[in-house]
Image 1 (cartoon, rainbow, N blue to C red):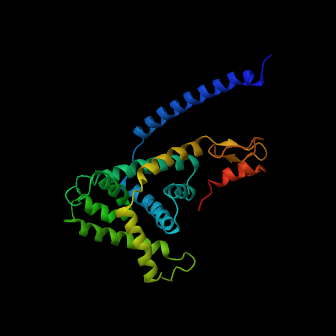
Image 2: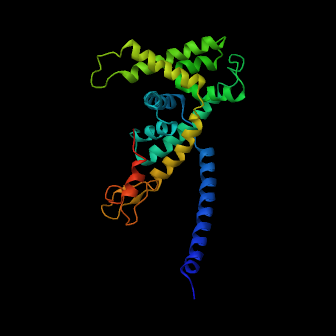
Image 3: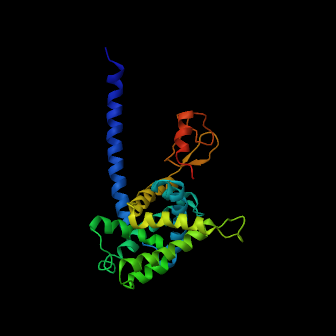
Amino acid sequence: MTTETETTLPGAIAASRALAIAKATYERAMIRLEGEVEPLSDDEFWPFLEAYRKEVINGVAAGRTREMHAHNLFCHMGLKPAEKAMGYLRFAKTWEHVSSRLYTPLSETVDRGGDGYGDLLDALPLAGRAFHEKAQKGYFGNEEALKEAAREGLKEAVTASLRSSWQPKEEPSADKVAKRLKQMETHVFFGENYHGMTLGEKAREVFVWEMSPLNCDRCGEQVSPVKGLDPQGFGYCCSRDKDYAAHAAEWACF
């Protein structure tokens, strides 16, 4: 007598093999794409950085994770799907380039071990373009001068993030600016934030999200394969499956 397990096992084995092959194929394809894609120019990168920095400033204050910072940047990108996917991929690649450009110029300025030095370089793009251009030229003679310049760049960004969009003439209080600035100083100079790694991982996810959408069987709306469809083939727009709705809600923006 043939059991149900015996009849379903071959299908499960075939599916697992197909999944392993697909993952390996995807990994090779993305490595090639990431190697070939052009980094952003400085004039493209720094405006992109401003948008990401705003997400980080607000996210650090709210206790959000680095994955949330990266996801919220994706949520707020006003681009068409293909432009968004490639733009995010290029931004993530350029983040690594911008960070690595400071490795030699700051090697005699900052007294930190290998991991600590790498963590600092990874976070320093958040200090902004003016700071970066000076640092790249070896402008700072010691770490305190470096920190002071970074504080200036961060303070400007923090103040801008605190300005109310519906009350633009009102300036945030000095206490509020000081509190948020301290949070960002700690984040940049003492954090293990892995911005480059997190952006790279999110870039791959955004690529899948934007380049291969699924269609909801009920309304036809396009749904990210990251969210997927429920067992009835419905997207989060039409689904009444509570488990699926909870899964879709994990990808909401904050």
